[in-house]
Amino acid sequence: MSPGASVGGGPAEAERGLWLAGAPDRTDLAIFTDRALRLDDAAVIRLRTRTDDSVIAWVATGFDVLASRVVGGRVTPRDLSVGADALARGLASGSGPGHVDPGFAMDSAWHGALPPDSGFVHLDDVPARVMLDLAERGAELAREHGSAHGPPASLLDQEVLAVSAGDLSVGVPMRCVFALTAMGFLPQSGQDAGADEIVRVRVQPAWLRIDARFGSVCRRRGDPSLVLR
Image (cartoon, rainbow, N blue to C red; front, side, top):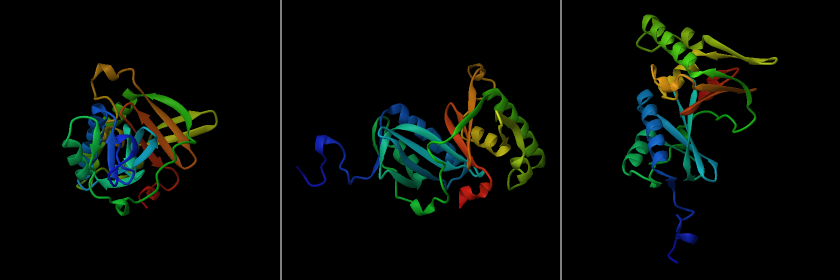
């Protein structure tokens, strides 16, 4: 056996990179990466092992909200931050399953903690159409009152939806709605196929999480700026 080879013909344990399970996973991650680059051409994506056969990709959206997408595959090391531009090039170099070169490690460029994988309480399901309507109204207000620096903070921080279950209630800020639409996690406006879709609102003491068909967004509760620290 040659140096660095692995038992069973798989990649050597010391080998670094991303291995995707199939072509749909490559496509899904490429779309996620492209959306991240539209928001920030210097975006950093954090790839983490979720299960033995799945990887979760995280990115800071610029709205003080984190976005994530799960794809089939594995990553070595198990927690790796890379430039979105380099990852996009690696994904574009192939068309199916297998190894992806994610580029140089940029672990020091990731600022802030990630939400836990468990401990969230399901509050309620909200029709995706409600989120789309809120996004459209928010975009109109942003065009009217925004500046070269983007929508005003007062608009972003406004809680546009209240979700509750029993004695537990949480407000959903416009930041989360904008992040959902900017990352393409909701069906496109006007598509009949999305009329019956829902988004799931979950919460735990430190985080608010909203799960949509194409991905999730998370917002730190209490002091949201801690997301970027």
